[in-house]
Length: 320
DNA sequence: AAATGCTACAACCGCACTCGG
DNA sequence: GCCGAGTGCGGTTGTAGCATT
Image 1 (tube, rainbow, N blue to C red):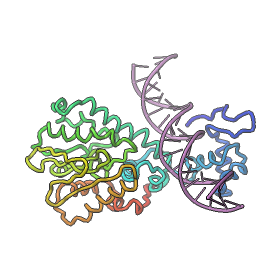
Image 2 (image 1 turned 120 degrees about the horizontal axis):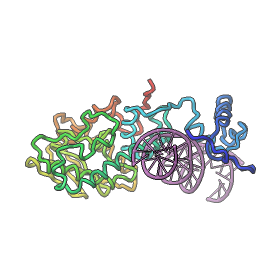
Image 3 (image 1 turned 120 degrees about the vertical axis):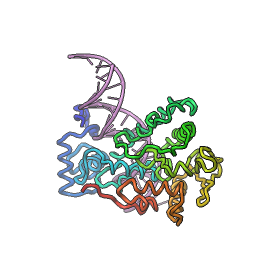
Image 4 (image 1 turned 90 degrees about the horizontal axis):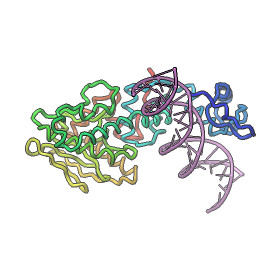
């Protein structure tokens, strides 16, 4: 991408830094192919490179490795990254391990440059929209919320929020703004339970008809709970207390608190939620269960299996 | 055509962990 | 147990190239 800086090599005997020249790449590539990976400081020395071992390792892993898949991320990969990130957070190496041919650095860059930007746009658009009352006139046009903009490269294939036709615009606006207002809270690592909980299906917000009818999730102050829409009279918006949240549906009760300071607890809780929903035998249940059912149809991989246990994620190969 | 802004991504940095002496 | 080297990882920076003004 960039041309090596001529000044990168110091005049004295210090190790070279900065961009790698094609000659250096050749040296490292030839050495690795002929000798395999060993101690990286030895690699650097034996390959005749004026680089530290750490730099050689990085160059090999992120750029020279023969099994690397170059080029843009596919839609499938993109969705998987979002799903995995919702479960794993910024554990790029673990995410990369599930994406053959992709490096943690690549995924990290993709996330920070592309996905994060879309989330930011989403958030700023909401700010500009103003209060629910102010936006009431425009909420009937979902694009004004820029919800789809989260993944702008995707086609409009049902990722837009779908409201009950009888829901008033003000309720829709209140509901959406309630969710969007929480985005800054979730920005830290974006460890939002969206993919698991149903706000985002991995490609954008996913408010299914059934989800809006009965249950959604919300996440605030470290508490993962539910937002119950229209459980009573049509159009009612019920936001439960933060400390302990329970939905009002007949066949589903969610009372979740989690410690945001410990990722393991957090993700354990998320997985518990997912598993609880999977275990439900009530296939006719609405709300959260249907949200998951909707989600499971979104990707070509078995997301249900993915969400059961992060440690059991399959290593997917999209290279075909 | 030049200036400016934006984006993508390669590479560095610092911290944490493991392991052998 | 301590120490240092090696390694892995996530955050951040720097900049080439493209887009826009």
